[in-house]
Image (cartoon, rainbow, N blue to C red; front, side, top):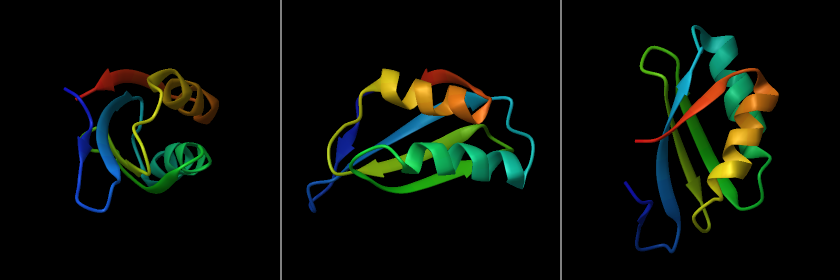
Length: 79
């Protein structure tokens, strides 16, 4: 699935991340991804493993993978 672009010119992508089990996990993943250039919001949900990212432009998946790895989790891919 490709990123969606809304009317404000931002891109929304949903990623699957494995290993998140609590609020601390959500915060770690959100914190790392939010440091990527252009990211305006990140919402991680441990119970589903889904991370929704809104950014000014579509993100490079390898940059997202590196951020998730830095947080100690594994990026499975886009949903």
